Each structure stands twice: as C-alpha cells, then as structure tokens.
Length: 287
Length: 263
Image (tube, rainbow over all chains, first blue to last red; front, top):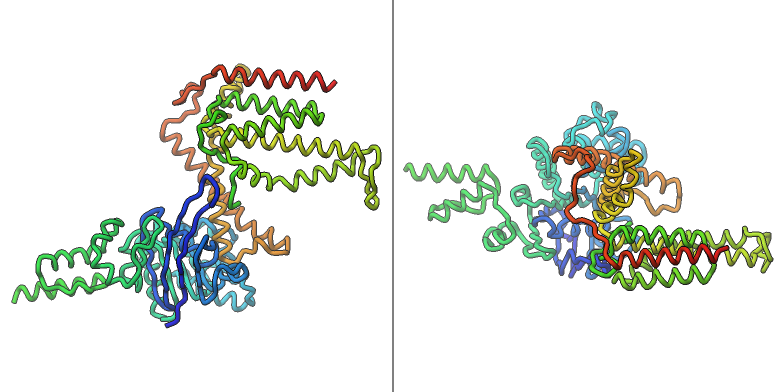
C-alpha cells in the first residue's frame, strides 16, 4: 500500500520570537497508508488541530517534513493547491456558511476547482445525499434557517463535494445529537468500505473512533505518545489513564470479565461482538 | 492577520506598566495635542526621543514595535510623497509634471514624524495597559460628564467589552479564513474582484458570529445581575502616586513650551 501522509520530525511553534511564542508540536513522526482510517485523540490543547492543519497545507512546519499525497508541503505552490486533495472539515464547520442557499454553499468548493456546471451539480447532489439531505427538497433553502446539526451536515457536504483523496475531520461529532452522530459514523464507514479513501478524524474521546480506526495517534502536550494499530493501544493501560482516555463501555465490561479470569475474546471492535461474546459466556455457564 | 501584535496588551511589570492608566491616557493626549500644535523639527525630534525612552523603560522588545511599524509603512510613505509634491513653494526638482518643493519635503517629514508619534504613543498605551485598567481609567476621566447626564459607565463598559473581544474576533477571523482556504477561497489571487469575493466568505460568517456572541454576552451579563447601574465597584481601585503627578506636570509643561514657541 502506498503512503498518503508521511511526517518526519515535525516541530511547530506558534508566533516564534514573540512574547506569545508556544511550541504546539514536538518531534512528530508517522506514516499513514492510503485507504486507512486514522483516529487522533488527545485532551484539549494537545495539538490535534494544529497537527491536522499541516495535513492540508494551512500550516507549514517550523522544522521537519510533512509529505501529503506524495509532495512536500514545504513547497509553497504545492501547499496552496493541497486543498484540492486533502479536505479539512474544521471544528464547528457550521460557523463558516455564508452563501444564500444550500446549493451555492456546497458548490463553493467545486466552483473554486473550476468544474463545469454539470459536474458541479452532480457533485453537489452526491454530497448532499451522502449527508442525508434530499437535494431536490433542500437545495434552495437558506442555511441560516436550518438547525445547528443540519448546518453542520451542509458544511461537511461542502468538503465532500470536493471529492478529496484525504478527508480530515476535526471533532465532527461535537455537539451533535445521536441521529447526527450515527450519520457521521455511517458516512465514515462508507468511506472506509470503498477501500482507497483515507480519513483522519480527531476526537477527544476514544469511544467515538474506536469502531472505525485502523490506526490511532495519541497526542499529549504536543508529543505523539502512541501511534499504531488499535489493538496495540489496548495493552497500554498506563498510557490510557495518563492521557485520560476511556475505552468504550462494552470493552470495559469485557475487560473486567477477562480480569476475573473468565474466558472472553478481548479483541472485539463493536458492541454487537461484545454482546455475542457475553451471551456465549452465559450459555457456557449454564451448561 | 497572523501576527497581530499591536493593540494587544503585553504582560509586564515595568515602570510604564505600573503607571496609573489615567496618567498614561492624559500623557498620550497631551503628547498628541502638543505635536498637533507645534511641528518644528526639534520639537518632534524631542518627542520621538521621549517615546523611544518610554519604549525602553516599558521592557517591550523594540523588535515587536518595529514589526508593527511595517503595517503603517505605506501610510507613512504615501503621506510623505503627497506632501512633497502637493505643497506649493520653492521648487527643488521636477519629476515630469510633478514638482518637489523644499517646503513640501519639510512638511512631509514633519507629518511623517507626527503620525509616527501618534502611532507609537497610542500603541505604547495599549501594550502596557490591561483592558480592565484602561476602561477604569477612561471611566474615571469621563466621570465629570455624568453631570451632563451622559452615561459614562455604559460608555466605558462598551469600550472595555469591545477591547476584550478584539483577540477573540481575530482568532475567529483566522479560523474562518483557514476554513474558506480549505475550500479553495483565493485570498492571494491577482484578480482584485476574486479577492474581494473571497473576503465576503469571511465577513458574512464573522458578522453572524459576532451578532450571536453579542446576544449571548448580553444574556450572560444579565443572568449575573448586571443592570448597568453606575455604582458597581471595581476590584482594584485606581490610585495616583507622586510619579503620576510628576509625569503629568512634565507633559503639561512641555505642551505649554510647545504652544508658546509655536507663535
């Protein structure tokens, strides 16, 4: 598999040389392959948002190397074109809406790509459908009239319509109701199933990304304290407590069962697997 | 807007920081009045020197001041150019149909230094005075106006809230700019129309967010019993010390000297 993100010794300092100087990222190294799902977790102020802004060229490293989609972001010209391949959904993206209708809002990105009218419409409709909005019914509405959750969907559709190779989402679930959350999860599952679409998602809670992530990055005070497969994180209880990361409830149940010496499979990834595991255990106990 | 340093309070404990905000406000006004009235070169030079000393005493790195000066560089240059070519007087040289005059150069240099003094003087005030102190100072100085039924307290509350929200506003503008850049907004396009259009994508969401924030803030203040009554007290009271009196006296003396020499 080819790599889509390569980060070598990345350091980043905000406002260097000023009284407000602050080092946000320290010696970050990792490689992400195409088609993988990366979950970035860490507490507030750990540098998650700063890290992802390097991935679509908004920030360039103070020192080190960031290679995205095969090209070094130190190159100014490439960095300014990177938005076409790496779509970044900001935290609370509903705050950036400005067009008069939903259609125009979603079409803003594709228009900047210089697409034809027909291509643009196809992409907008496709993106709206992906976020669960019916294009024909909603395209003429003003985004301002929608609820916060609906506006977020429109904002995300705005990035999906760019059809980037890599999508980066900064806390897309924050403040959403359960319908919105499930929609987001489905959207990402869908991307994952396609096989070649890479997704990076930030969350402050491990629970949100557990079921989806291939790789997990844990940031703590600007340093990458863990990077690797999800399963490998499980054994590191010390790290989990240190970074205040909580496992999903069902995993906690399974783990405490295992800790009591019961024979359960602890490599499960979803609540369904957990329930069948527990049922199996109960059935064995009855026998 | 990445490195907005001007207009931001820089924490410190220097002599200038410790001065009473009213002293700094009054001195600033006196300096500006003085250079408006008298713009002889030695007078302007003296004030420039005075402010340079004040900057050193404040402990603010000169680098920061110089960097902020880059922002008004064009203003200074244009002022100088227009003054030199538009002032009537003894011609020095001809550039096509334009004539540079001796009086023009003198006036241009003078105006540039006056602008520089205004700018340095007010940035030093803002950089060494926290917003709370600044608002308290303004309120206290404007207190006499309450006799004319002018709601000074409201006025100072408006000033302090707006000052308080400048950094938030800038931060938000940065986020929205980045978000629109991620959708391909061309802020650096050579085409000025495209650039203006791109900026609309920032202004509208920013305005919407500010209105929302103003409403939220009003609610939050009301729910903590803010009624706008002027008799609310502040945690730290303002006090005049000897040094404040001396400084204001010195500034007044300078102003009088400037006024009497200008005739």
